[in-house]
Amino acid sequence: AMYRDDKEIKALKRAAAQLLINSSAYPRPAIVYHYTSLDTAIKILDSFEIWCTNVAYSTDTYEGIYGQGTIDRICARDSDLLMEGARRLIAEEIDGYTASFCAEPDIPTQWTTYGSNGRGVAIGVDAAVLSSRSQVAFSHVEYDATRQEKLVKDVLNLFRGRMLSARSWPPRKRRLAYVLTLSFVIVRAMLKDPSYQKEQEYRLLDALPKDPKHHDTSLEHFQRGSQSVPFFRVDLRDSTASGAAQPIREVWLGPCMDYSDGEARLKESAAYRAQSFPIERSRVSLECD
Image (cartoon, rainbow, N blue to C red; front, side, top):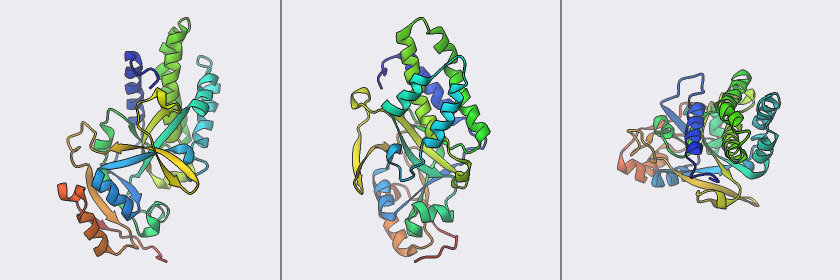
């Protein structure tokens, strides 16, 4: 990051990440599920890596707009911390990156939207392993408008005293505003319209300056149609949790997949050979075309 050697900045990043992790009104599920195609699942299970992609390239054109509107509305009413500069920085100089998970393994809409129309899989990952990371935050997506407002205000309050005390020290104020901006980019990706609540989404989240000179993350690109989409790889095992060596807890096969073929391919993966995990079959009814 731009201020990566500053001890205060590092401490604030940790505090903000912990605030986001602990902000859910519901107990964290033991396992969260990443719905994807079988071919992509095999790549994840062979490498233990998942991709965090730039949210600006999301197939959902509403991605981020709702969250940004919520942040703008609350910041504009804050008499202490007028954040016009930070909000502009969010829009112009900072990118959000995410990888998505679901709290449930066998939801019809998840199969049709993200699981190859029922012919994919849902990889169950240990949520404690995802939460216990030094890099990349893991948090729920918040759908309730009242709790969304509280989350934004809680982040502001975390920085409030330091920001006010730094008014006569512009360099420190700029550093604090920068980290607050990074936090808000993550918060933006956590806030979704209440109509999406059925997705029960959790996310790995990070915020990076658009200028590669200001961060240490190695970005790569993949093609989606005519777009070259930026992403970075996240090692699922990079965690201090006790189960980090094998973060895969189970895998579900979609309702339209040939179970025997899917099971055989999963059992050939590096993750399964390292430590076997249950392979479940979808129990939902889905029209397979």
